[in-house]
Length: 60
Image (tube, rainbow, N blue to C red; front, side, top):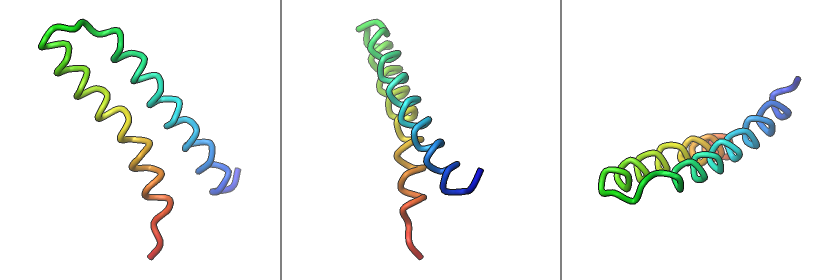
């Protein structure tokens, strides 16, 4: 597998991971504690893919 192929596969996996995190966070309770955990989980779970895509598109 070449680097570009691997990068595309990993990008798709991070997108799927982020979508699953959002679905999971929707199932958390609507209590103040649940809302705080939901915000943290969604932010950290979706930033993985965003950071990966940004790092791949950087030009030096």
